[in-house]
Length: 410
Image (cartoon, rainbow, N blue to C red; front, side, top):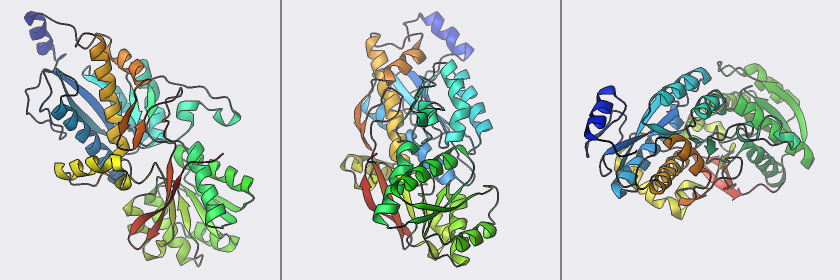
């Protein structure tokens, strides 16, 4: 921000265009304003904070909040206090678009973290890009978000320069799962099911292509309605298909009951899914029969990364009611990336935020790099993370246990 006279600052405050926050105050979203400075920078957080996917969304929100608290405590950007503003998208594209519009309208918002769902991201990208407001998702895996509709044909075109993500894509996750299922689990006949949404259908597609390439057989396919929990008809088809494994493209609210009903139908075979089912709630919904079910998730297990030890300890000490869940580390790193971009812009402008801060922060994000909770954080020419690691997890008892980590060998 350029230096202003006392009169100009007073006028801005009266108009609501500038927020000056006293050190040590606390906002309604749980963000801490301690230890920063006179100018408040708001980082928007969009995620499902209510509904079936709230376990993941609340982990995203809390982890973003923790990043701002740590930045303020460390005075990462002199003269700047960071805080979050969290909005609930309920995993609905229309809500996500409305939230994006709200963030854009708030001039104090200089970056946004989220969303969880790729379908929600599709509705938000243009809104943010038109406003030159940077967006960093900790969870979106749909390849089209960064590489365009024709990415599978090798025609990769980045649709929006303001969009980045710290999670790797389904172009890698689906094939990685297929290689594990075929080569390691020795499953040769798969029944593929998806929820018809951007994430689920895309993930099922990349899994199927790789599974076939490896020599596997697809013995059946089906789409389900994510609004229902009765999958008995699909479960019967799976039983009659002779499949030795089921691959599901979708999320845990449907995957859990689906797994349970497939087993009840007599098909004692594992259900495999992506990061959308990697949550303890899947195990609760699927029941005791879920033992041996598999999920892939982005990155290495956060709890086992030396770089994540401080994050885990700080999260616990902060006293959040909900766990950081599957995307906590990625949410922290997404928020920290925005903070680092703000730092670069402020340093380049003699310690002040420029009038075109949003555009400058978006531009600076492309070259942001640091050692984060989830490993090295950096972005390629499409805005995708350069960290391509994935992990396969298996249900053992009442927990997900990692069984293999690595990168997709295409």
